[in-house]
Amino acid sequence: MERVMGGGALPLLLTSLGVLLLYRVLVRLRRGASVRGAVVVITGASSGLGKECARVFHAAGARLVLCGRDAARLQEVVQELNASSTDIQQQQTFPPSTVVFDLAKADTVEKAAEEILKCHGHVDVLVNNAGISYRGNILDTHVSVQRDVMETNYFGPIALTQALLPSMVQRRSGHIVVISSVQGKIAIPYRSAYAASKHATQAYFDCLRAEIGHFGIPVTVISPGYIRTNLSVNAVTGDGSKYGVVDKTTASGWDPRDVAGAVLKAVRQKSKDVVLAGPLPTVAIYLRTLWPALFFRLMSSRARKEQKRKDE
Image 1 (cartoon, rainbow, N blue to C red):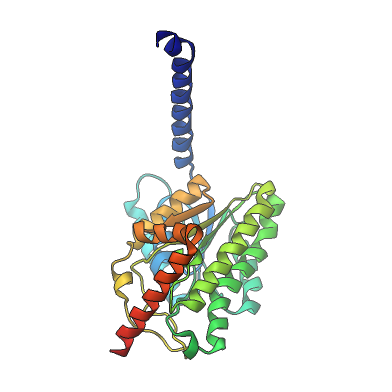
Image 2 (cartoon, rainbow, N blue to C red; image 1 turned 45 degrees about the vertical axis):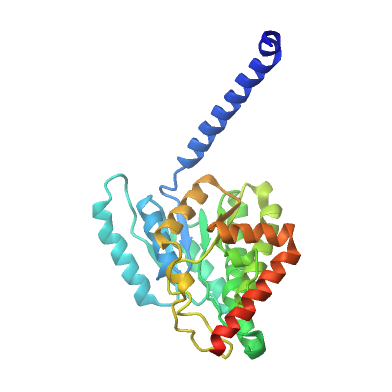
């Protein structure tokens, strides 16, 4: 036993401990990576998760370019951030810039990208956050609604990404972030348009990560579960009207401040794929891959139960 410990196991143990300590040091260093002075573009910044991301990145010292459709609401966010700067004593903060455009209108995105680049001359981090949700039965949903959701959640973000990407490639510097969803990894009933748009988002940015990695530009896909925002209230239904209801799952979801903090951490660590969900959604993601037959049965059961509640 002594010979084994002295000749082989003890050096192996010490080496393993050394590797573990080195790993922890590297992780700590990655956690400490700063976004101070970095130009960070956030879409959908006038409310919800986008607004919270604006707050945490502003407090971290980033130079923000806030994007959205409503100029007045964006200006309110700017005023809030500027007012909060007096309470932030750790480091210097910068007055945010704003660019107003509708991500769902493809013909406005390229011009918006030009305006974004004029703010500081380049972009260090692009956070594709803007999006819309959907609630409805496929049989009752017009295909135009499916297209509208795809325009906002998929075509808009990729159009903005591709408009800003050449400047990042030229500098060989930048970071692309997209806020996807757990529903970009699994599909649940009565969310077809939303789940489809997020599946497409996941696939596109996975491809992008592989294709631009050699330029030194990381791509981060963040997939949260339910977040306590107005996403379900503003969701569209099968006829295009607003859903107008805060779902129980949404009401009991993640605090958007915590999700925003996780986004900042993912940027600092240059994470590739981050899932922010509880035990059940996380298990469901693995179940979809490892035991699809059971997953499909569970989703069918969920669909029947949900339809029964609607009929009552």
